[in-house]
Amino acid sequence: MNFKQKIKIILGSLVGYVIVKIFSYTYKLESLTEEQLENKIIHSKEPVIYAFWHNRQLMTPALFLKHEKVYRKKVNVLISAHADGRIIANIVKKIGLQSVAGSSTRGGSEALLQLIELVKSGEDVAITPDGPRGPIYKLKAGVIKLARETGAQVVPISMNASSYWEFGSWDKLRLPKPFSTIKYKYGEFITVKGEFVEAQEIVEEKLNKEMKIVDGIA
Image 1 (tube, rainbow, N blue to C red):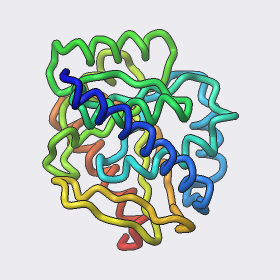
Image 2: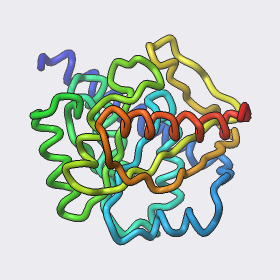
Image 3: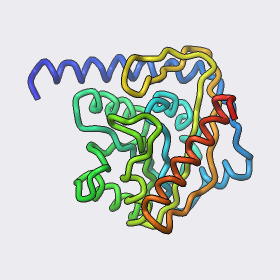
Image 4: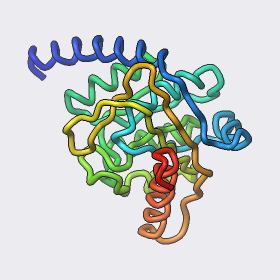
């Protein structure tokens, strides 16, 4: 990594953190989850794998900040190892989350092995299963491999903001505008079992189902 890249990461991390932190305090959060299920998830004693689509990731800090005092386990977010990913990693670290660098899409990757160890040690993991390059809203294999290796259940999370900026990236990344309302919904725990492709289709279908609810098109 050259000097220019290091400066980009330092400045990007600082500016990004200030924006995320300040914006998060202006958001109004609206849960579409049944209270009993939401309490069961955030107080779960067993480690879980949170899954949410890549273009909704800038909405998650507000949600995790809301629940930071009640989560009993560390939450580790899988983030790509390139420069932009390191900026996001520094931001999430500043708001109290841990990060793992890399991709879970390769079966023997160091990142996947690290995630397996974290889950087996009792910590939660958060993954954007269509990242880091898409296609959008299509679930890759990593989350299924992780669930099968650890026995941990998958918890789909869907979010949408009443007002947001949309970037021109492959995932049409969304940044909620200040004072917008973020609707969020936890899906039911998913136990990954059966044939690999079938399990992949089930998790993808449930994630998209929850997304349609928060998007108001279900």
